[in-house]
Image (cartoon, rainbow, N blue to C red; front, top):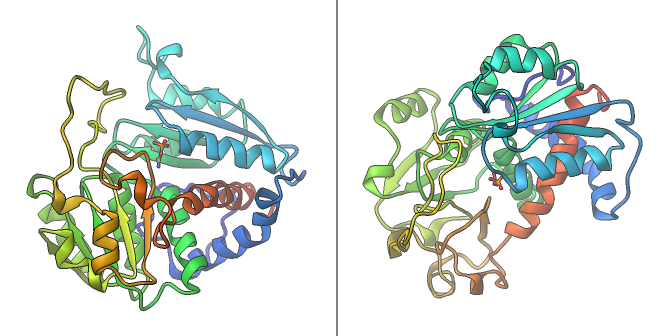
Length: 317
Ligand code: CP
């Protein structure tokens, strides 16, 4: 297995089966600190730099919370407009990370341009973690989700997935790559204009993912062990910021998971994930049902970032 020490976390493409289990093991060892709200000094001599060119609640703050739990320091920016990358100068990724690498030991970057963290990794002498790049990928979110499923179900192989939402989403790309390493058939349900591209489907076939597409959640929900939902009413992820402009519309029934649907059609022990934020695709009355796991997913978001930071900074090998 490749070492995690010093490694960039840019994509789940090429992330190998045993590497998932290794990172889950590290997370299991660190989880008690987060669960008991205790800090440790594992990374007391390290600093995390956050470089967020797009809004975020969970990804940025979960990385920061993880670093603080591990005793490290945090610096960075949450709004590129307040830096030279977002003002008159439009400073390049190269010039920016050639500075940031002197301010800390690992950089987590979110960017509206697909591939920006990969560009950063070409120039930085410290690890880059992709916190979401345009429509590209969101590897740390899907690592969190796979960890949550493994924890709840005790396994990944043999579970059938249903993914609902906008298949252009970065989470969906990381999910598809991730599931190629496991025996996990998946059905994708999305509006036609948000479906998987032919090019990506060809790639998934080459990677031997067992996948199908359906038009309505009702066609696939009864067989699913894991239901992962993302919005279909959402901003343009290729923009640095997309303000809400009037009425944004409602989610059609095809892409909505309601309490009634779960009660009537879902497996009794299926689990429901949503990386959040949500619109109306999962109404709040689903929160207190036996299917929902998104608050656990949110907690595990901190644990997974603890595991990743400790690993790429070489503290847990
Ligand atoms: N799930 C997720 O990426 O949330 P944020 O956009 O708030 O980081």
